[in-house]
Image 1 (cartoon, one colour):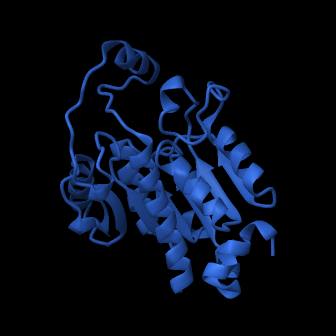
Image 2 (image 1 turned 45 degrees about the horizontal axis):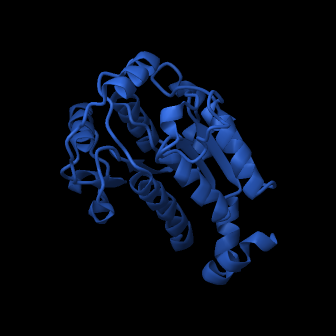
Length: 242
């Protein structure tokens, strides 16, 4: 047993720890939510982790994304995150894929080779495409709804998709899934808090020009982090319960 996991094994027991090590997880989106989920999983003993994202680190990521620092600006997000995760556990098998997930690239991801799929995508259409794809696989899916425009950590909840409420992104996802005839249940992390959007002209123009976004919502680390930690907790507890 790697000595860095001494405290973890005291919590889970050796047999559960070995199950954690053998489990295979893939995370789609390693921004404000997915990056914290990835680190929590690696620190919790996951040895097989694949991270997928097509973005690069920009200065406006620094306030909420784990791998984003003044030194990593301009780097590929998944590569910067992989470097950090390997500093934590050099023996982990961490695969970084610098690619966007959508209908065109969907066939490149065999989700049946994973035990868990984490949806931390913040764009509606790719998110729904991933959910539909994951629900047809053998993997267990956990999803994150919107973590932006929120400040109150006590409003963050975990519920089955059809029991979620109060989140604008969640409502759009549910409506899309209903139109597709999807009826399966899966757990989602969400918050029913919705705050006003304060438009800061300079910063908004920077991100609008870089990422062609129509609207930039504010976000903060203690919220995105809790979302990510909840996702990681769902994985670890699911492994232990089996």
